Image (cartoon, rainbow, N blue to C red):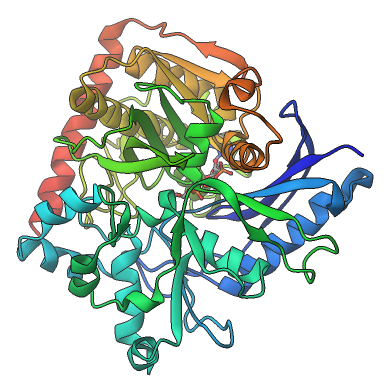
Amino acid sequence: MNQYILALDQGTTSSRAVVFDKKGAIISVAQKEFTQIFPKPGWVEHDPDEIWSTQAGMAAEAVSKKGLKAAQMAAIGITNQRETVVVWDRNTSEPIYNAIVWQDKRTADYCDELKKEGKSDMIRKKTGLVIDSYFSGTKVKWILDNVEGAREKAEAGNLVMGTIDSWLIWKMTDGGLHITDVTNACRSMLFNINTMDWDDELLELLTIPKSMLPEVKQSSEVYGHTSPNLFATPIPIAGIAGDQQAALFGQMCTKKGMVKNTYGTGCFMLMNIGEKPIVSDNNLLTTVAWKINGKTHYALEGSIFIAGAVVQWLRDSLNIIKTSAEVEKLASSVDSTEGVVFVPAFAGLGAPHWNQKAQGTIFGLTRGSTDAHIARAALESIAYQTMDILKAMEADSGISIKELRVDGGATVNDMLMQFQADVLNTVTVRPKIVETTVMGAAYLAGLAVGYWESPEEIQDIWQTDVHFNPTVEREAIEEGIKSWYKAIKALEFWTENP
Ligand SMILES: Nc1ncnc2c1ncn2[C@@H]1O[C@H](COP(=O)(O)OP(=O)(O)O)[C@@H](O)[C@H]1O
Ligand SMILES: O=P(O)(O)OC[C@H](O)CO
């Protein structure tokens, strides 16, 4: 009987399940979007039960399509939207509040207080992170401080917390496992990336009881098996990684200096920096790339909060396109933005600016500006934000980047990919299979159970589809870059002078 790997990708906007074969080919896919909850400006929540029901539903669908059977799955790998956090009751498995999503800004003022108290250096050295509401720790503190009775219950040992990987595995094992992996733990602002353990000083600072925390595991090992309530045959759960680290692995950026950028809701660029963490001098994050066979690899990361989401905004709020795909045609209908610059800071600005209070702004509008100019400026903003991060990465690592491997939903847009290559003046490489996030999770699980023998075996699966080479004259591009920096400066002034 043929054996396969089932990989689950619980993303910000949808839950997906994909079955892979040994050659890395996709055998079946199931995907479902779920509800985004915006209770107040700047707040973003998900219903943990809907996350679970959509993810479990998609897993069941993927393993039963095309005559497949659960018993054929050699292992399950899990990858997930990171930082988004759930607090639930250890005894009933009931969440006590919605999941607070990574984009949620409700703890921005508290983060500013921590900065004023002079905690930035200590937190950066221990966690590799800048203080920002993006990370899970302050979100958990908010739940404990604001949900009635939560703190007492937590202190009595009755509440547990976890990122989406923990929550899914808890549900998949009927509460049998409360675990996470190093790549998710390191996004909590509670985990020390030098000692590779939860940090008591940070837990005390954020007043989070240690009893709430999951056990931290490697990214590739057999953690346990699914409960018989999920699939008739228990399947080993054998890989966990946050989605961006999974994509780095799925892109086979396994050597120091290799870089990938994922263009989804946000954009996340990661550079493999080897087995020693580098503290960034340029406002990037240092993050754990993976831990396999006892060896930890680190990455520098630049996180952009709004990338493909700006296209959704054009579609859903401005209604100037009907589908995301239409943006390419509209943006290509003009040769330039005619001076329009769009900074889509709908959720503040992430790396390297870290401006929590920045808001989306469009500069340079004239009576001649049209929806096409705005659409083009929106796409260009994705490339400019990526450029800011690439420059910071080169400065931190001292490595000049030779090629950028790309993946994620927005990479189907050839115009965007070409513009990206032009702005970076660097070749942009799109692989044949752009499902690298979920593939990364499959690889991690497959390696743990011996489905694949070694990363070298997997290396041969990764294949290039298109190389986008820089083409245009630098002059026009440099003009555009100058305008982008002017816009970022103006936005800084706007937020500093409320
Ligand atoms: N042709 C396109 N051009 C630009 N952006 C696109 C295009 N098609 C989809 N997108 C964007 O890609 C994102 C979805 O990518 P995906 O990798 O599935 O995201 P996520 O994992 O964050 O949910 C959406 O924000 C969508 O607007
Ligand atoms: O679900 P995605 O692909 O938007 O990724 C979200 C990131 O993990 C947030 O850090």
